[in-house]
Length: 621
Image (tube, rainbow, N blue to C red; front, side, top):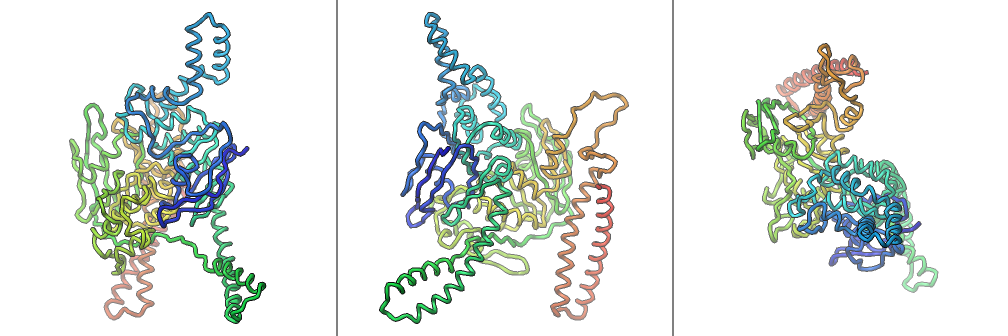
């Protein structure tokens, strides 16, 4: 059954055309993920089909009496109401039935009205409504029902709006970045909720596991055109690659035909026949196909980085309390070169406080944090970029210099750097306040990275970034040779980037888990309920996340295994660089001997680490 028909809609801002002649439909049961680069019209298209914005051309046609709900990025709630009042003030059929039933109870003489209200309560299963909404609010961490909306954070307001929409049981639900402001536990609960509830969904999200687990169709807006993929995110990736390859073949054929027709055009006399005019019209269509270029600019991140010394970051018996809340209690950790740590945990367990203490903006109550002399932090916070009135994109970068140093003594201008971050020359002279939320985050990320940090701290870096930029950022971070701490609810991102996790459990408990997020979830889901401890029972070791403890690596061996893999990658690169020097013929005299000794040491170290890596690998089998 067709719910919505989008017919030839178009939208532009001044001379900038976002899209035109866009047509598609939304049918019952579809769960559509909408994918596009930041600034190409995702939010505008979503707002148009949700009815919050008018298209320049075309129309959106809905099936009659369709029940629709929309969750925007910035929900509009009454600040004077409490959480519970907000739920009951919503346009909700179940609430109307409950209200009718309560009135019928107050008038026992009208048995017919009572019977009708009773039947409606049964039909909508309204008897359990209070339990339902309290369960949803509990899952979304909104337990204080008397708290006023005006006292809620932006994230809490978004979660309250989400709860309202879920309780309204719409037939069609539009969602704009629904996983923003949700922690990992909430996101996984929402995935399960959408799997069992009969919603038809159309949503914008950058959460790739959410797209994979929830959606049965991906629609992509690219260069003003829509492409539909009847499957989940993995299916989309596979078939997009095939489509691009096919387009390249067709473009190649069109170029050959174009050359042939161009030769014919040049030989034609000025007086055209009807037949030749038709061929001329075809020629211009061929020309357009032949000159079609994919606009797949990828950010190329080759920023230079100062080397880290032997001492990086040491945390010695650090404690931190806020009133009755203990966040850290004599916590100790010593960071090594190349560490890649993901931080997970519920809100209020101390994640942000931990980052702020590392960077020096908050002091510990006890203990000390020692930062190495060579450490240069790059801290990407959730606050984002400070917008100055009248400031253009290019001006933001030029505050850090007109030229940015790259590896091997090269440099690029501020303009070239912005182009690599997907800001073309025209966009560079736009005012920053005109940028979309995702574009501002991309610009902010650029300002953090260009300062050549060797210790990156990223606090929710994936919020509002499009999937194209996320892929580019991931590729950069995989090659980043410095230390890295990431706080993120993007499970796909965490799985790709981090080697181990700091799990903030609350009450000053921080566990160091040797694996990525998916490893952690498998471990958590497979844990048996704790048995009653006896005097003879041995405490559970950190290595017990493996099924077979005899074959498993110990906690320290897990860390060593990850570290060896990183070290081998770096050593291979160093070996390759020296080999290139030898083949270039630029080395002379003492330099040849010096580089030869250096190469021998590297080869010996590689062999030693490979032997140890094999030993550890055998234990894991």
